[in-house]
Image 1 (cartoon, rainbow, N blue to C red):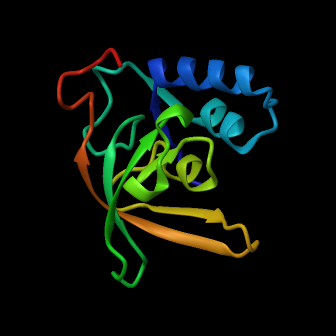
Image 2: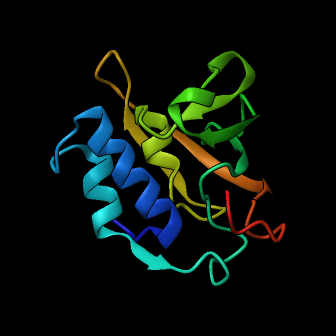
Image 3: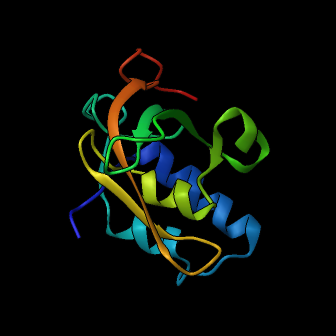
Length: 131
């Protein structure tokens, strides 16, 4: 798998979230953030999915295009496209770059895939390095 990139701030916040949720070091999200390349919020490339980034995704064949925002559990609202980083899709999106594919196992056990077509909004690219 290609290396994900996450900001140091997201790493700290997600680590604390995992601790609070009682999720161990063997959770997929924990493994992902430990393996990811960490950069400062100021250094992160504008095409990387960070926390609170809004992305345009579609199926690999180009169908079903929609916007999703990667968020923390309290903000999660699938109907509005707010996907928790703890959800399999949220974990799959974190640290991807535009053009890469998120793959995860759906509730039915099948592998699902969405392609990140574009980053519509990224807090860091907008100069917001704090929240």
